[in-house]
Length: 362
Image (spheres, rainbow, N blue to C red):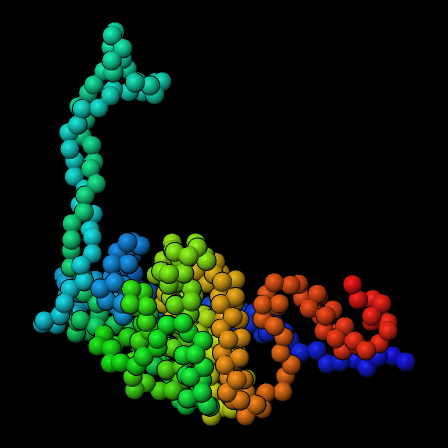
């Protein structure tokens, strides 16, 4: 008698991969719009700061978004730094030429020319010497004036089913404190790498609050200084600000999209209107180099966060209330085993009581 065919549900890894594929397609569509071209023209005028200066900015003003010098705000963007605003101090290169006595090189052989006594022949040359000076820059929140173009919506609106439980679950699985405060810069949240804490702007909609909390928790998970020092992922130390923002928002979109299946249309966790534009804004180009280079990291981090949040919600009995009926598979198993191996194990489990399966199991 033939075995009854069991319905196969997509694995959690397959769900996450499908969501990140949708994310990439949605951003590519946005890149074709006139709105993006207008935004890109403006953003091209902002200086691309070095990794060291990015760290200096983050240490002094962790919620900074767009940074430029006093004069640049006036002449290029039609904005004025507000009276009393505190400057962010960074390093600007100021190389200078210095005459120095150096060994004379034979251009034909590339070797040092020597005197009869064997000592090197010297010549005087102008050498460029590296040097730096401290300069003041200001975040956009410290300025006022002409509006800057934006992509997508400025803030998500809407309620979230079991909002309090979701926030409690996120706080429970995040290893650093998550607190609400009034953020003067206008940022919706930030992860403070030095104080090792997360701040969320108070008074936002439930949907924006959940999305921002997951975004900042992703920063903590993927980009904290402590994790880098521990050698968990050495490459994260050299990530640019662009790459970090693309990773964090991609994780937030993926996690929210996964839990959206448990919500109804009046309390959806759909962040696409915000996330697509945010990621496009932080990407270096239309080929989405940051997103593509980070896809495996994004999928792994998102899956691990989904598993952790899901576990916390199950402990609270919330998932039962949300009528979760689909079978769940292990995230880490999906990430580290081939799909055919996962399918084989699922089939073996469904027929575990038959002698035939016992004989075939290795």
